[in-house]
Each structure stands twice: as C-alpha cells, then as structure tokens.
Amino acid sequence: MNENSPIGVFDSGIGGLTVLRELLVELPDEDFIYFADSKNAPYGPRTVEDVTALSSRIVQFLVDKGCKIVVIACNTATAAAVYAMRKDFKVPIVGLEPAVKPACLKTRTRHVGVLATEGTFRGAHFKNTSDKYRKYVSLHLEIAKELVELAERGVFSGNEVDAIIEKYVAPLKQNNVDHIVLGCTHYPFFRPVIERVAGDGIKIIDSSEAIARRTKDILMTTNMMRTENPHRTVSLYSSDSPEKLSLIANAYLHEQVTIEGNVNI
Picture 1 (cartoon, one colour):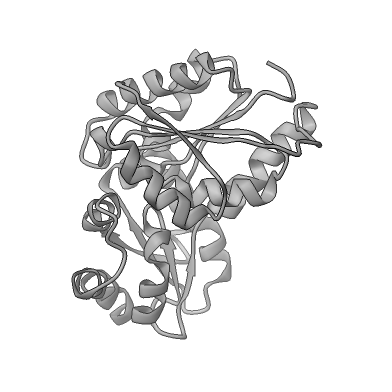
Picture 2: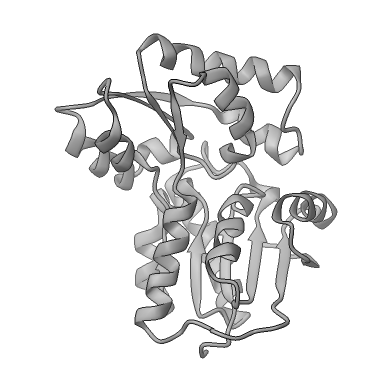
C-alpha cells in the first residue's frame, strides 16, 4: 500500500453513501472502494458478536483490495467492532459516532434529541460521550429503525416517510430539544423531511463532515494522502443487489461510479 492506494468505506447498506459523499468532497484526488452489506442489513438488532464477525470479513475484503485506510461508515458497526478491527488489522480504521458532543456544546435549551439504532445506543462510544454531558444536558433517545428499512428500499419521501418521522420527532419537540443528532448514516437521506417536520427552531446535525476531516487528517499526518489524480475511481460492491446500489449512488453522489457486482460476505 502507498499514497495511490484506495480508501475503503463500508456500511450495513446504502447509508454509508452519506459519508462517502463527504469523503469525495474532502478528498478529491482519492480513489474509493465502497462495500454495502445490504444482504445483512439492518445491523441495529444484531448481536455485537454478529456485527463484529460481519465487519471483520468486510474489512478483510477491503484490505485484500489494497485499501490504505478503512472508514466504518456505520454507527452500529463502529459501536460493536471498531476496537476489535483496530486490533486485528494493520491499516488505520476510522470509526463513526453520533455527533452528541457538538450538539451538547451548542444547545441553548439543554435538551438534545438523538435518532439512532439500538446497536448504536448500546455501544461504548455513545455511552462514554453522552455520560460526559448528562449532568448538564438531557438526551432524548429515539430508535428509528424503520428509516433504515425505508432507505434500503430506496424510499426517501412520501406519506409513509412523513408519518414515521413525525412519530419520532414529535416527542423530541415536546421535550424542547433544539438539536437533533442523526446517529445513523441512513438518516441523512431523510434530512429534508426531518428538517421540515422539526421546524425552524431545531438544528439537525450528523457526523459525516467530521469523519471526512478525520480521515483526511490521518492521511496527511501519515504521508498517505494522494494529491493528484485526474481520473479517480469510485468502485461499489454489494452483498445484495448491485443494481439498487447503483441507482441510489448515481443519484446521490453526483459522481461517476463503477458497480463491481455482488460479493458474498
């Protein structure tokens, strides 16, 4: 591996495309390999052992493809497996965690809402961060698992989406939150609807930009960042339907991508 090697990114499904889009902006000269484990999505209800095993096989796949760094673009996988992945693999592993810290530092009402999966809420990352601020900020948690399922079906708007988001946002509004943290990479697909339902007084935040900056920082400080690449490639793999992944990726990324096909993990 060297500075010209690709960056690996993976998620339980298509949600990590929201992180990949920020990485493409932040690192315009890098090649990327993205893996969507849609066959096994959602990860939220799965055990820690199950998610760790799936993550290990995917990271091995990306390392075998020559990736110089791997971004776990999934909050649940990060919560379950990031420490094990860092122990088992020599390449840098970048993990994700909900943007609870910036929300807690910016809140005026001292009430913050968090939408995430049950796997994320169980994880040490979330617990350690939230415990630091619980004395001063009330965190109101909602497990919005239906949004993952809708995203994997490619449904991002409509009456069904409105009703589900209203169900989860309404109690947060009643609790006077002024920030809602999107703690799952699938949720930014629904950001326009969440913003509309939440209203002007509530700010919606996620960690996609922060994870892209963190990845860039690691590459720069290890002298592994690519600075010239006139024909960069973005290769996508899926454990399920590559056609569905291609359709959503082309519409969302605004970047030419190559669908490499189905891979059994």
